[in-house]
Length: 326
Image (tube, rainbow, N blue to C red; front, side, top):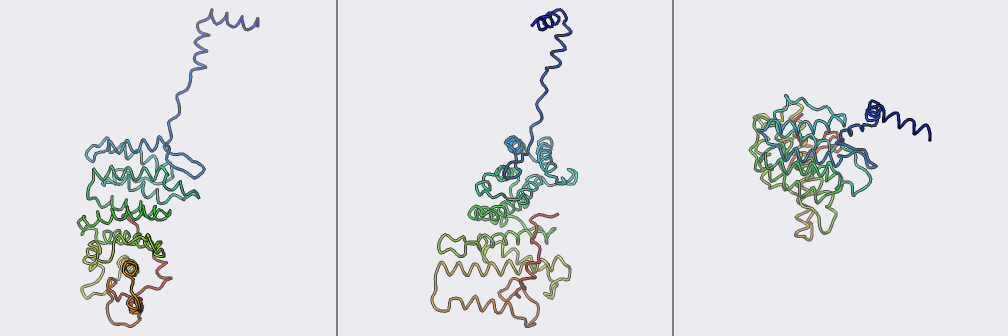
């Protein structure tokens, strides 16, 4: 106790001692809040990260360079923390790249085993919120349709089939309102076909239901199908022969899978709506028999009812088309 009283007396007599104590116990500034966190179900945005991204989007305007840079920096920080290579800003003229890259990151995130997490994941909710805000700034924007396609793919892959169907309905309606980009013909065909493929996958997972089955958002008579058919002439020569380059061949094969799947699913749905007795399956089986015929009868139209059916192993080897250009 005597030593304690002596030290207190010394500090009262020496102002420098009191200053030293203040320096020693001066609290450090709090660390910067992280945009990401690692929880028991894997990584996700923090509440702070979710708020930062949404606030940056609310303030975003295509002609406001400062607000645009703020959103790009926040998204770039998320991509960097996840080990992704973020493209240099000077190479990205399109205003939709932040939300497009977040949507890709969402699809690439490994799922956890808790079903409730799929719908409550902050990144998923943030991407949907940013999309809604971006749509107000960038109406009729092809890249935003591709974002919707990626959201629908995430929902389909996590069993949220009804959510995916609603998202696809919106995406396909928006795609039908867009002018076809003739300067990027192959890419324009590719992402539209990919939307149709996701639509087929969603519908296929409920085709066994007697009730509450999900119809095609893009049936064979849809406007988008007619646009694709009209522009698919670029994949063939003037004589109707498929072009020899690998991209055209891959798109032709992709088209065969997507359009044949859609016709089969539509036939099943029509049968569910108006059940028929007798040989109601003969029509579709005859069509499949023709499509698998190996007779060499001339150039094959991949979008006709007589399109040649791909071998299953060959179909599985086809890579899933990307929804946006690389």
